[in-house]
Length: 508
Ligand code: AMP
Image (cartoon, rainbow, N blue to C red; front, top):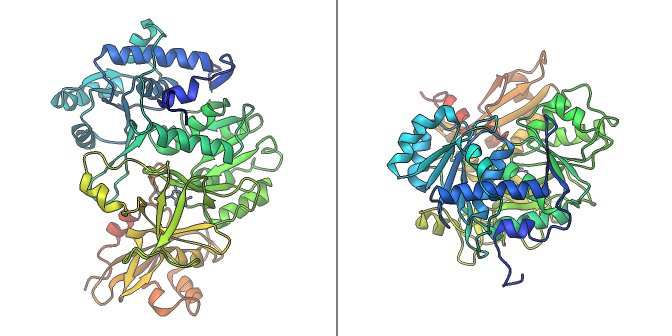
């Protein structure tokens, strides 16, 4: 890229705007925000940040409900050359104490109702506090409304940090993934091309904005394309179905698609204005993919990414979008599969550790140099922790997190293989296979299964159906039928919770 240009993500997003009056964001109450408005609002807020002592490189932490001002805060932080640190709205004060203590922001923005508790935590690291409520009101927007919209975007280099996102950390401490301006800009630009985003696109934005999917993929891709988004505070299937009549793209987690499929209004007719349905952040069941195609005539485009790497792979726009596969490496991204023990690359079709390298890959974990070092190979590949394979046609498949691998009687058992068998049984909605401590086997393969209402699925019927289809060591020792699987806000099944719940079932 041009080395004299400002590499600040904000500059790359907006410096060469040819039509500032274009619509950028639409809210449910009818408010329409043009690109020029958005830039002006970001300028006002950036001025407030600076007036509160935020300097280039400082962290600005935000635990705010989804709203346009919350998105503006992200843009303003980046514009001021500071580092944006979004925090899941579900985090408790106890959890926030860790994040704020670790990241040492100079400013924390939170809901007015939480200002007192968060104020005490912020004071410990000398951070100031501003408020921003779900309705967009608070001390931050109050001050911004009086500030000047003129702001000179802080000069930044490609590798300077734009954001720190804490990984969900289902095991061990959460780690802050450091993302640079170029990590974010290059990945979004690549997706704009890959997914054919253009000015006429209208995205239904229903994802949270404290996570890479809603914050970077959805927002940055839309803005880079000069498209517009309908900004929804949360996922609402009824509303989304209505909006599909005039929108073109939906980006969702798999739960969006399973929930929309339960709606009788979903049909070829109701989705005929839509151009693209993207899914990611958790595995989309192959059945859901097929059912969606049958009902709507659209093949969901599944992609794979993570907080640390942005997006790595995507099913093709034009070619086959294969159910159960996450597609090809994006342009400029290298993906390889290795033996987790030796680090040597394995053959096609063989399962191993997925490793990734490219401009999308983060700069390391905040203040954890040792941890960072241990997750990168010497040749720069990042060890994702996901197990998977590359098939004969080059499609990447994920079989699960490495830490979810079950080792029973010394044999590796890949949960996905057993889950796929169970999911294909009549009456089964979905399943999760986990390993829990077992005196003889080390870990006992255990299946937790969700069935359709009234389906005659039992532990015995599942075991009977699996018998002869799976090697003995892969057979679940127990099968539990439940109403729901525990999931986090991004639709990921929380296997750690399942492992805890069933921890004692094999103890003697
Ligand atoms: P997060 O950092 O919260 O975005 O989580 C990243 C993890 O989500 C990845 O390492 C994968 O384990 C999982 N993930 C993301 N997209 C997919 C996908 N399309 N299929 C399967 N797993 C996925």
